[in-house]
Length: 280
Image 1 (tube, rainbow, N blue to C red):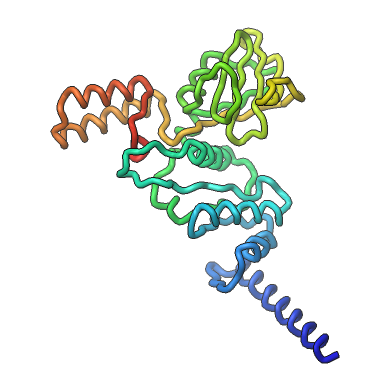
Image 2 (image 1 turned 45 degrees about the vertical axis):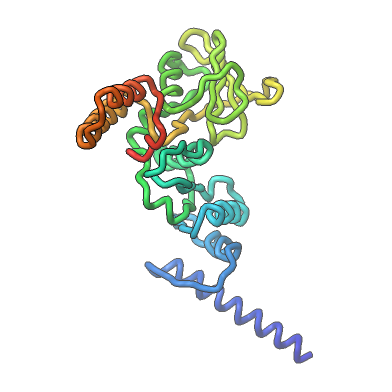
């Protein structure tokens, strides 16, 4: 019997400490906790008042992904926790960034810029060391397409290209789009499935999801959000600023005119040289 009482007393003490921690986090500007498993941190955070928003920092990307998943699970809401990946490579190394990580970053920034519901943003510490795509640039390079609305077809295609979507014959992967007559297929990274937009001139006749494997049309969709999928955008304003800065840097480095010209031509055509995202 004494063992049962001991267990009960231990549970009561743990419950009291849990309540104290939750109360401190809810009322104090800073609370330091130690010795907690990541899943316990996620559960504790999920018990905060729904109106309380927080940026949660972790030691690395793996911990951030796991914590974001646990926060969604405990909160019972897929949009409760937004995951913002860090950068795997140094900005001084000429390698292409991870495209999927870039798409996830832009999906999170789009979510924040457009005031969509969220409670937590989870990111590794390394993510704080790099600049993000400006909010106004994200808004300029985004569109909401609604069924039975009118849109400029050419502008939609331009937004997709400038935002980093890859034009392909058949849409199978996030961050790609295809144009076939009156149909525009697009796969925004945040979406569960790609969407097929059926146009009659300026009018959106319908928007339907489709299976990327067999291309079969699925249920109707009321609207889709199209946002950029790469950190370095390719709009007119971005190109003009990039060319100015690259030209100045080339002059400082006394780079041969031929190489400078090649870099500027690559920027103009949309071919981003390795490491271009580091100039954000």
